[in-house]
Length: 421
Image (cartoon, rainbow, N blue to C red):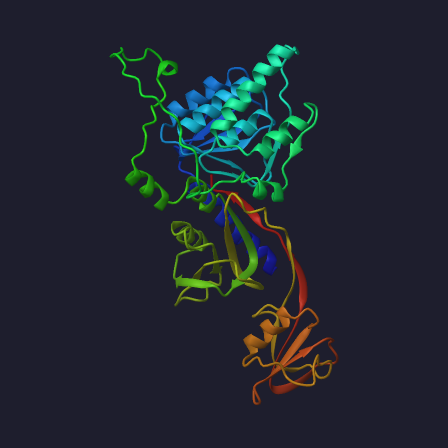
């Protein structure tokens, strides 16, 4: 019955958040395998193989999102010449590149990744020998020359070249975490980065473009030292993307105990979730007390992190997940519900885990001590002496004034995920 009521409350929160998390006008614009979310115009995504026309499709995405800062990559590769042209645009515009955890960036996609002014491979980065359809020595040498020329501009480690040219075209070398660190593949803000070589040519006035495809890509201008220093003090594009939550994991009947930032009173659980979302830079989790008999005081608790998971039938908790965070696994816990699992004036004699009482100073601390102790299956707190006794078995119970006891039950809690994108 308690779980049924919690699920009803969870469904109510989901219905509210699904309407409020994403504005009605948000949409995704696609340009071949590239896409831009109108609510995240600073990010261009690549999902899928790179085709013959995709250098132009990337230009279309850049024209649609002229203030883009980050390219998020998930591609098995594709046409080498297209990958090199896209990489050149990424490098010239000084965009950052990211391979999220669970994604891959192979072959021609690796050129794009290595072009990033900042770059981070949380997923798989793979390289192999250049292959071309002509299958003759002259064409192969020209392709290799193009790859060397472009990757040299990006300050690519010679070790990367070595592994690339040693790996047959029908195989793939996926860099290990130690190789990524050893070869300096990841770059972050403040690292030594080669500057794009941009030649500014005087241009004669031209007529306005007749179609969006003819819109010129914005010219990159050399940064002054002052602007470069200012750029380094700002949050990097990768950090900004990684810190912004993109999913909300909701748990019915679970309390995230501790780690409180603040508490407030709100009208409902959806208001508690919204309060956490409004300060996502600090708030990473929340717990809402669903007991409508509590008519005063705070019922929403905003938290710096998830804290200790504790079973509580009247609690609804949520955790904000960032792009780099894995999907949460189900939680199997031994719980003692602070309301339904506690019995006043009941003693559980015998079965003590220790000859000495646990130092918990209240029934609540004693309950939590049992929850946190794997061997503990129950507890008894003696109010008069202030003693907490943890038990490894439950014998016959007896009525005794001033005793507080509780026993564990084992439950599994599975998160319901809401996409905030």
